[in-house]
Image (tube, rainbow, N blue to C red; front, side, top):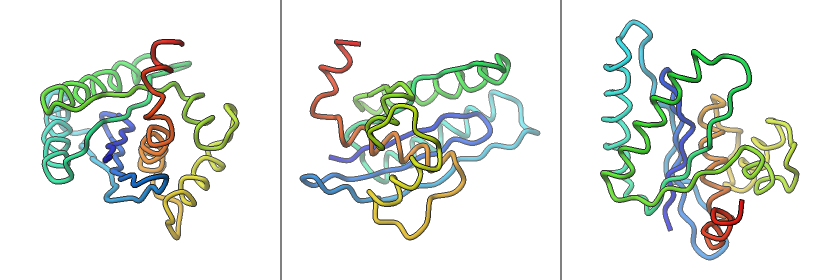
Length: 165
């Protein structure tokens, strides 16, 4: 199974494509979609849309995994992130991908076994799971890979998780 993990943002959208074979997970591609703050929001969203379509065409994932949004402080930033997240979900629907959404605690639990793990712990476990020499940078990329790895761990059980919150 091929999974596209996404950490949505309108300035920086992290992505990571992983492939599972049995219980082995290997990275195929990961990176960052960046948009300029000098562009209008609609042009930034279009860039995200176009880049995601290209990644999906190139890597042909079976599913897309994305983190559910959680805001605690900056609602204005949250609105922009929500718009970028909407673009991600639109692309997934148009390309026929199944979508899996995870709460931050579910991702942490899946990656480290502890729902309150620190970011550095998660990043190090992602590095180890994927056999990478270094922790992926920037954080948006590492977060996208964490979502993909979490889905790889839970995909067989996802429908049960989703229906029993």
